[in-house]
Amino acid sequence: MIVYWQIFLAFFIPSVLGYGGGPAIIPLIQNEVVNHYGWLTLERFGEILAIGNSLPGPIATKMGGYIGYEVGGILGAAIALFATVAPSLLAMLLLLGVLYKFKDSPRVVNMTALIRPTIGVLLGVLAYEFFARSWRASGSFHTFLLVILSYFLLEKRKVHPAYVIAGSLLYGAFIIA
Image 1: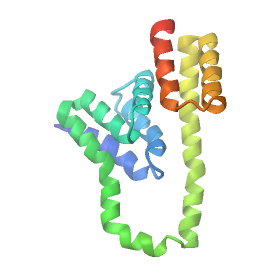
Image 2: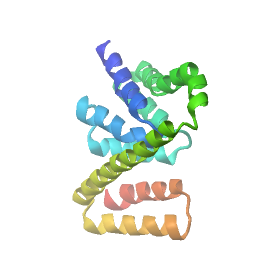
Image 3: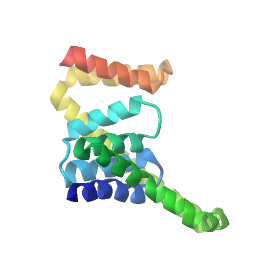
Image 4: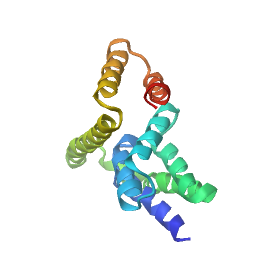
């Protein structure tokens, strides 16, 4: 029974603190499931993130459902999904009138402007950790090849990120493995 409470907390707390949507809470979820509870390794978390990014829909709920299922089965998945959406749902129900009233307030605008750099730093640290682990696990040749090829496909050829992620997964499965 304690594992279900832990699943709830592992996804509820990041959802409360992760202002800015799914990408903003990914580092917070990673901290909970990898560092705090130890349910996943960073490599496994990266794999789940890559798979989640290649599927349509919000990343936080996909990750919550998958990790919740791995840790606690179907009930764990349901709890993780609820914990991921509960803070937004409660905030919308309780604070909608207040938020609408103060949406143009200079304080609110300044607060959101100050939160954005923090989210950028958290995402940058997560990207660096994945890059460093990829470098150690796959070697410099494969890492640089995937970085350069991904950059070219995403920025120059405007290929959809899902195709780049799927291609990287296939490259890793058939070439690196």
